[in-house]
Image (cartoon, rainbow, N blue to C red; front, side):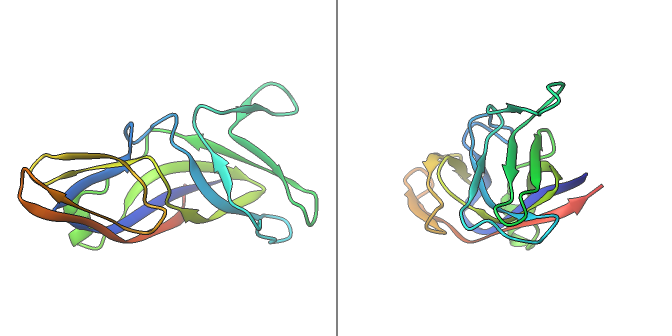
Length: 166
């Protein structure tokens, strides 16, 4: 069993608290990434989607996980179980210091998550308190204007990494 913590960073201009729309442990937020087989090293061609509110029973029937996927190359099964409670928003302070924020913890057995894709369902707020919701980051950036604060706002240079944690 290896735990992978999804860490995100971005350049935030006049924005703070970048996170999934319903908070750090949003049960409906979809995480898209590729999986690398722990046995043969084959990486899936397409992204896999996992979500906290979608679970599947393991063959033994005693527990559940969020994903069971068989490697197309060697036929070994891998599982991904999400562990909520470890995430926090990406703040302006973290962004300015070049640090990452933890988003979600994944317990992976027989597989390794790689290549997280930013998509829909994000929220952020301006330094003046204006909330921006339903943000789509699939293009790699977001730009708007904060009428209340009378300033441009932007998210750019999105990056994500999976870090092994104990």
